[in-house]
Length: 174
Image (cartoon, rainbow, N blue to C red; front, side, top):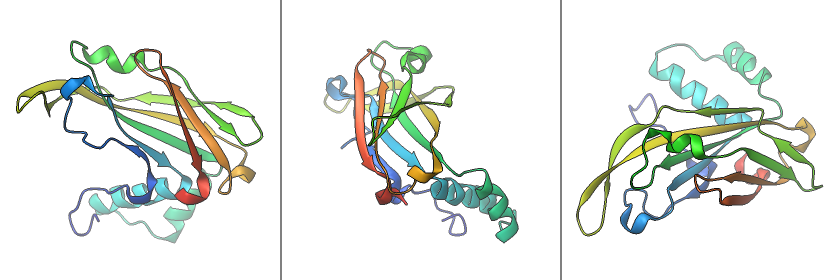
């Protein structure tokens, strides 16, 4: 992708994607997409970034990067604010958990919120409206024996306190 000058594609790492992330008509759900960051996907992204920087990413660099990824899974939420919300909308999203098939629950080890930026969306009819756009990354450290065959449920609360739950089979995400 980087060698061809293309943007990064998430491909099979998409857990959820809205049908039309460019429209906010009717104040639909502000969750645009959720990406699963497996150890392999993060290695793939690191290689992409280094290729754009024209830095080498040979076997030793890849092995060093991969050595710190065992048992880690991330969920990246791509979000926009609702009408009337400012940049603070992103701070209204609550904690996240991952629950494994045995019922063991893991709290996010780290939560990273980007600084929201203003972006244009399609409103009602053909109007153009602006909303704040940002990302939240929830990082979990799981027992490495759970990966990659586990059935998990990722859950978090949104800006209105509503819980969202997404079941996933890790084998699908490699």
